[in-house]
Length: 390
Ligand code: GLA
Image (cartoon, rainbow, N blue to C red):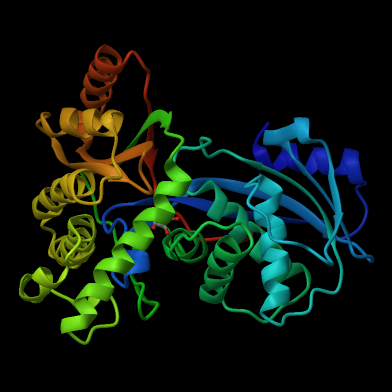
């Protein structure tokens, strides 16, 4: 049974088949290049995935919500009021939905009532493919549609980030929510995170596939280290602002960074700042190369991105390094790097179609040999963003 039928059936059994029941989907994302640039005023280049979270929902005529998630059926039905919500950092699936309800209120939108909902996702858990942003955007589009709220999709992305920052206590940037909200089939999104200006860029890969490799590890420091990195790059910016008038690290190119870098007196902040500046420049160059059909340059920049994330931003880990290094050895791999927040999760690789099977075999064998663990592969198809589907 496909997911849509499954959640519909579950909904009817739990909450009844009557009334206006609607179906929604919000995708996860994979980032091709532009990592840890989003809160530094730089560019990112993610695409939405065909994997994500699905929901069926029906509005109620009181302030209650009743929610059930088939991925977490042990939680049972979550039943609560949409009024009087208090931020917390529990990070459970329903906290991301409640956060969005809260954020709508904070931003001055009136949500007239609650809703019943059953959801299920097909994103691998804890893999860094933005399961939480997908849940936020799912909530954003359910509420937008059920209550005819006049909010644009880019603003739904901003709302999701706002709720994750202020309700769930995670200081993420805008990339994941924007990718989930604004995806377009066959395209990646070239987003300037400082101005929130974006462009859909076709992934004209006729003979290549985007392969995601899941390391199946998630190191426990991920959440706190994420917020630490943000502080450290803000510190780099503050040092630079003593000698140069800039608003974000994304305002600087390589040469400008060389001129000001001695002002950064803390060596950790220097490395974080260097990554943010150079990664942004790499992203601009990579998109330019892709538009010209020069995938090889894109691949070289992916490798540089990984090395910089490993050495300067220090968000990789042994497992991700093994996956990337093994991929670089294979003819037919155009580029490979860790993707997303790091400390585990996935790599993204561009692989010639006729090499994909060899890629999977060689990577799986090498990874098992070196780590004793099994990895998992997904072929990424760039998909449309969040919305109502039935
Ligand atoms: C996580 C965050 C994003 C972004 C990436 C790193 O996915 O949610 O905002 O910072 O890490 O590029």
